[in-house]
Length: 107
Image 1 (spheres, rainbow, N blue to C red):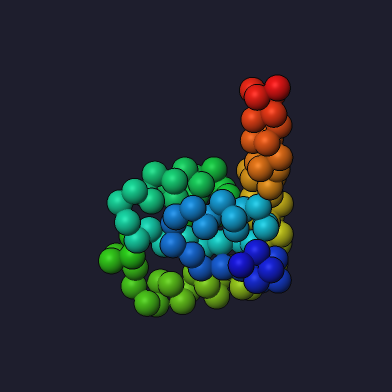
Image 2: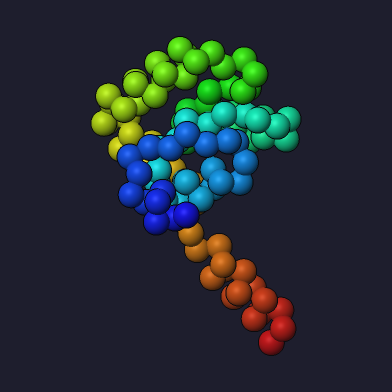
């Protein structure tokens, strides 16, 4: 999946844990909330400027979705800015840090 994310100029994603993978890859993302447990994360990431929230799936009109896709596609600088910011949120080093902590605890 990361290979596809790394090659993509942008993504449209549900608001689940895939957002963290997209951040690690630096793939500018339009996120749709499809479950109640996704609202808080999508709202936080959007308000901090990591992603663009499209809101609750049931309230998203087709034309609104199309417009937001077109706007992000047309704005290269915005995509670059989002990508750089996203990569600062998730550095992809979590596994290494967890292994180091396990080694510390078990040594």
